[in-house]
Image (cartoon, rainbow, N blue to C red; front, side):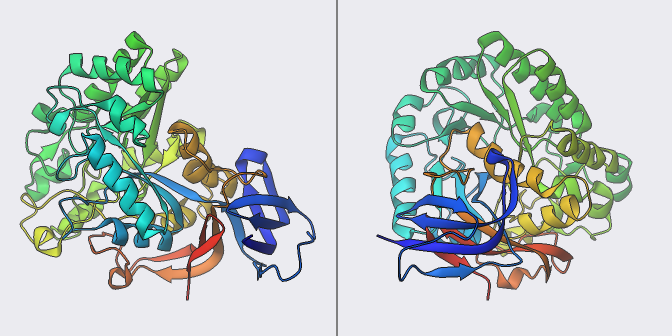
Length: 429
């Protein structure tokens, strides 16, 4: 029997309304006991975690692991290494691989490859449409039976409203959510940053807030029509979050997520970057007013989850001109420190609410194991040092990619150990 006893930690678990100094005993991959001055069997290994915060394992429900097909950007192994180094015990992998995860054989490959790597849990997200072309529903049921936990064409919007309606109806049969990439491609019209006075001033084609908001509104109405379960990916505008509030008032089953780059950065910082393509992401960095709206949404509970939207790219791709470079930022190894520094130390929310946004609620949204330290729960834990100061250095990333706008920034608070199924899979040096 494998055992591990964590002593003297500050246990923060929103699922039990816990914020208390306790010991935690792990046995055979599960939480065996939680309490003060626990006894354990002789020869049980112990970790003294005095001064550290012990939380349910953090869960990122929006990552791009790139494998199969784009291994030059990232692999399942390097993505998992980045995840555990960032404090995540589980990630949900978006389907825009090559081939697209629109077939149960691809779903099975992702799941089996992650199991062979043996670091964090990887839950595949199935494609909504065949080839992510938005023309015909994929074999959703077969992929759910192979372990897919949600359905999405992320990376591309579903422009066909009838297809989205059918997906919302069909997915209900399997108890999974539709995770929607909300972008009207006609309004976006090849833009590369937020449409504003800033984009006009620096001469880059803009993407208006309406490109996101009209699709959010459409899909909320379709969720109401069908009774379907809708999850809105990477919300970035004040208008989108207002629409989520409206949906909640009407009793529509809608959840939403935001990213650290959208609560940290605006188009004005992008303009000051001298056309650095590491600042190019989709949705684009919005106005300072939108940044404040995202922070407000986190504070008032409109936002359900904080995700990374980890989107690694090869350096040669990001070396192109701004308009031609791909969208995306590598986020797995910076997200926790960004959230601790800006949200907790910045007094936007308390630590318990952050854990809820990065563990408990993500598990609930996609019906995943974890998100709690109740007895019998999976022994997936993240250890945090709230006082640790770090400087973001992309050269130390476990990810293959270095595309981050946060290089050189100093932050307070960081993950220091990641435990998956009762085993320490990463520990800070």
